[in-house]
Length: 302
Image (spheres, rainbow, N blue to C red):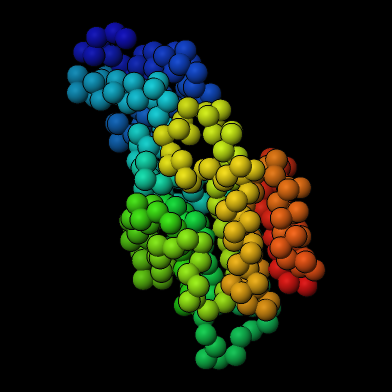
């Protein structure tokens, strides 16, 4: 790259894009623009609008460090310490899995079920709050997105949200995000393997559990190797966590309860087989994501 004291923003973006392209980035220019916006504290639109902007030596050095980390494969979200999900900004680092866009479907479906339960058949005055569990919460993205959206709709006081994870480190990230979005008093965080046995039944269980087969882990993109392995590794067939949760659903779900379980796009048949074997007679439905891929397995009693 040119000397830092001769750098303009546009020139830096061009040079960084080429470095990232050579390193194998799937979106080199986008990565360069997002990193530039992060370091300079401006919107990405500002990067596009002002290529003539001169960069200081300190800015050039920091930008160079960011690009070096990205060239090494580190995800942009970890470099920024930030990931957008469901229209909200979430703090994120290597303690927790980076929220994926396809998981927004899980939030959409969960919100739909909650609104339906609260409005289609109005609950008697004095009823206990609707009980919702987010299993494997990680950064807290699903639970916090639910809480924030329900608060906007004036429904949050009628819902109790429990978010669980086996990782204390991930729960620390989830707490940071719950506090940042002012819902820490409405989302209960528990370190637990799936669901605590002493909890009363839930009206809705949402889960985004690991679903990568162990043998497939080494072939994941380099960026995924920066994420917690146990947040990705689903065992020999990628279904061990799902299988364990499904076995608990008869006791964990209220009589009219529903479970929404995120699955890998190539796991539809095997995931439905797991549900059919463990929950005979239960209804099941698979919801497609925006790319038309199987993404959410919905199960419930007949």
